[in-house]
Amino acid sequence: MQWGVYIHIPFCRQKCFYCDFPSYAGKEKLMEGYTEALCQQIEIQGLSFRQKWGKPATVYMGGGTPTALPPQCMAQVLQAVKDYMGQEFAEFTVECNPGTVDAAYLQMLRKGGVNRLSFGVQSFQDELLRRIGRIHSGAEAVQAVKLSRQAGFDNISVDLMYGLPGQSLADLQESVGRAAELAVEHISIYGLQVEEGTAFARMEKMGKLNLPSEEQAEAMYDYMTTALPEMGYRRYEVSNFAKEGFESRHNRSYWQAVPYLGLGTAAHSYLEGKRYAAVADIAAYISGVKAGREFWQLEEEPTRAHDMEEFAFLALRTVEGLSRQAFADKFHVELTEVYGQVMKKLAAQGLLTVDHAGCRLTDKGFKYGNMAFAEFILD
Image (cartoon, one colour):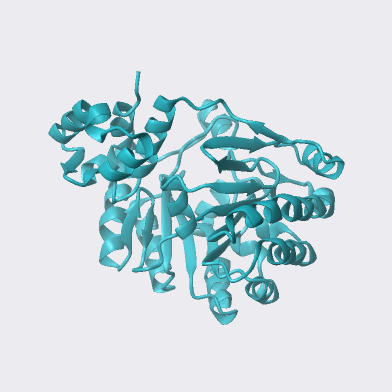
């Protein structure tokens, strides 16, 4: 059975100003205890699900900043994965901050079974990096990718952002160009969203957040969706572009409703049609694992309508779109019986292409995706 594993590392050197993920700076004293608890969970639950479903196809370690872990802690986690979940996975990704890795750390990751790296670069301009709270420089990002090549990695992804405070179209063009010059295999590029509870949200309320205008942000979007394919990066999802054969297998599994096991604090799981969330507090997670307590919580029991909505949303994020056959196989009802009128409406607006295989967003639909997704909500 195809399934994946997500491992959450909640630590970071500094909280980025835009970040609302469950991650924490200044918690170094908890790293060893967290590593021990995580390895215990990998042994118990990872081994259990491996015995049930076989070796997972993909493993993804995210955060936070996984590479904020000291080398000995990271090596311990990698060994636990190897011992209890297998090795030589089709894809084993670790997220990295360029400011937290050196040649020795990268070599340790490669020897530990990691075969894909995802660097949170966001921008190659130092001033922009400072404004968003990143700890690395543009030069360090370039060096990190080069050191990764030397360590033997041939599957590298870079995250970039647009719509940043003070960012210009020329800035974005330079960053995209630098990433392409480094010949990375995959580029994820996200528009800034100001989320509640972040430093940027507080700055915005005080009138101190100098964001690009809607017209400027739209020009950035138009540039990246046009330029990246011309550079050899095919768009395969709303925010993701890759060279042929280097699409993220793990992320694809999310969009295709493949089961996955979440390990670590705040990790989410999707198992047998139900979603679970782990406790977000690091200390509570550590004590819970050591005591053998149940620290997972079943999220709201999904309704059939909710499952249909989510299936549609996730599929429409991809260029392949929503398959009639896949929908019928999962829900035992024809796609057009549920969404026929919605599909006609969005097609008339130029947001959706409809054919015998199903439906998918047009270029215009990707650009105004939220408008299209809203139509797939069932009353």
